Amino acid sequence: MAENIEKVLLQTVNEKGEIENSYAFAASLNVDHQAVVGVIKSLETDLLIKTEQLSEQFWELTEEALAVIENGSPELRVMKSIPAEGIANDALMAAVGKDLYKIGFSYCMKNKWVKKDKATGMIVPLVAEPVDELQMQLKELKETGGSVAKIAAGSAEGKQLVRRQMVTLITRKFYKIMKGEKFALERRKQLADITKEMLDENADEIVLKPYNFCALGKEPESGYLHPLLMVRAEFRKILLEMGFCEMPTNQFVESSFWNFDALFQPQSHPARDAQDTFFISDPATTNTVPEDYLEDVARVHSKGGYGSFGYGYDWDRKEAMKNILRTHTTCVSTKELYKAAKDPEGFKPMRCFSIDRVFRNETMDATHLAEFHQVELFVADRNLNLGHLIGMIKDFFAKIGITDVRFKPAFNPYTEPSMEIFGFHPDLNKWTEIGNSGMFRPEMLRTMGIPEDVRVIACGLSLERPTMIKYHCKNIRELFGHKYDLEMSKNSALPRF
Image (cartoon, rainbow, N blue to C red; front, side, top):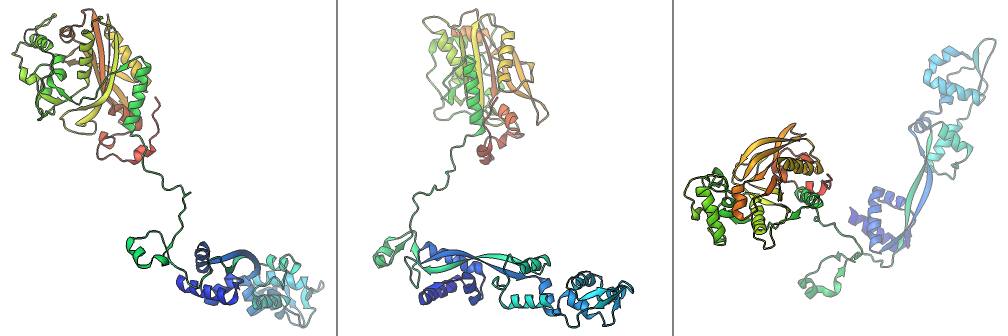
């Protein structure tokens, strides 16, 4: 259809020089004007034609007007029902109907075609052969296509017709079509892409589509931060403001020695089984543990020391040398404390934190994953106690917006006393565990060489749990893993605690 319209349009412009009215052109082809407009816009884009947009006004007849043309005006129809001797008002209304009487009789009176005898109450005709001017006007408008040349838009006749709902004044836009800069009887196809074969065969005939180098282009689908990364950055900012220093955590593979043994965790502990820990097959073992420190740790495990009886078992060096995916970032804290203990300038108070991934071979559910993030922080100084630990935890959680915090006594191999930390989850409507805490045991610290009067208070929590609370997630798998919806990164607001 569009190709036929285009062909006829170009031929008409070529023969006549221009098309004065696109509406008249569309009517001559018996097609919708919008179809012609589409062809006009396309040809104008390629400079084959140029246009001038104009407007015209005309009267459009209503259904009432068409009924008047066919049957006569309401006043004439009422007039035909009035005999020469007159008629009673009620009889006239019954004869023509209430609706027609209401409209027609009023115009009969206005035109002075009838009068009402005051003495008898009869309606008497004054004109024998009335002229139906309304019907004549409407017929003339229909014959001229509603031309405003016959009845001007602002004239009294026009206003009267509008008032009687016989016509509607329409303003219609149309195009005057003329030859364009690149006018031709046939449009050559413009190519957006070309190939070597096309250049070899008909290079001279190729017409390239012009490129718009100022177009903005599509916005790249990138640059959005994952909610976990946003919360991690906010946690890091808070901890730095609290005076903590960040520890290096770029070593995912750790030896069992630093991950377990140096923390005074027995080699028979269930957490060291394959059901809970991911063991590395290549390289399966490490050889980078300081020998003197290793021997001190083995002695404390087997025979005790610093007020402890130890575990009373034969400590296995091979078990300690096994490489694993770290199960917590406490191994990083252990290394930092060991380094501080060996400082030749003596021990200095420390505030350290780390935020990074840890791995545990456990069953996944709505609140547990095999891979997640752990936030670890500790303070090492002289004469610290449990009150300092509780205060530190409350201060930190208050800064991240969790004010409802509870503590529950717990057991950890490397801390005594130990406490589990619980926060209230508003969406789950229950208290959920969000962290663990305690004071590092002397068996761990004194073996490193930490002075006897130095205490270390520490706590660890997952990054996922506070993020779930912040973004109202009920299932951790919707936040981290293959089920994560990337739209969440686009739509999630920056966390502000």
